[in-house]
Image (cartoon, rainbow, N blue to C red; front, side, top):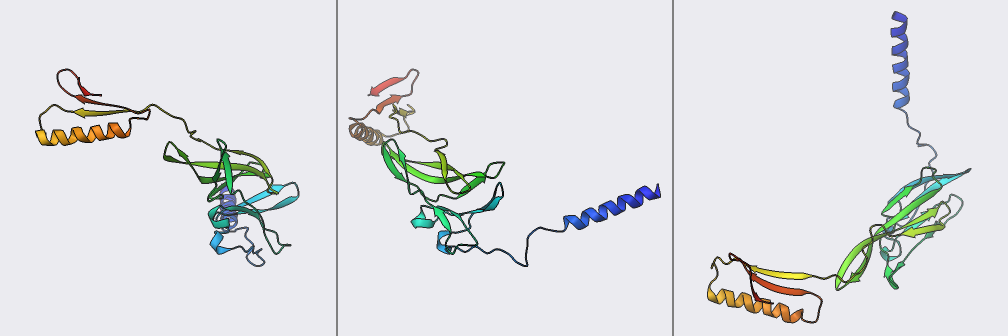
Length: 210
């Protein structure tokens, strides 16, 4: 019994010693430099492809905010970087911003996906913010691209309803001002697909004007 207790204590002591260690080389580290204004090093990802291994570094503010993906090398003075300044959506060229804010590797580590959350496109005078992602090899070659949860620009029917509660809480002058306001909106939207109506709440709904 005492032998088992001694063996258990020895095992725990060895495990604690190992758990307090780390595998970062602090005596001869590899230092990769980049432009601070580019946010070089915002994300760092390790990759392993056969006998080839290294790191991928993102710089989300490179090229005036377009962003870049870099593969540093100890044997080169300049980092190898790729940039995607724009993307085509519905035959329109849209600028890509902040590429490299997110990056993830596959389970093998030889491919990775990098994304930009700042792809803005206009639709019916509204601005929609979407994202674009690129799947790449460890040599920074593009395999494919996709736009997750992308919202296409489609014309939709909109119904605009003004409801009066019928409680006589407004004065006649206030009611007239509200009516003029609604009429102005209807004139503004006259040549659009938006339908406008006004309703007065009573025992039954009654159209005031349409």
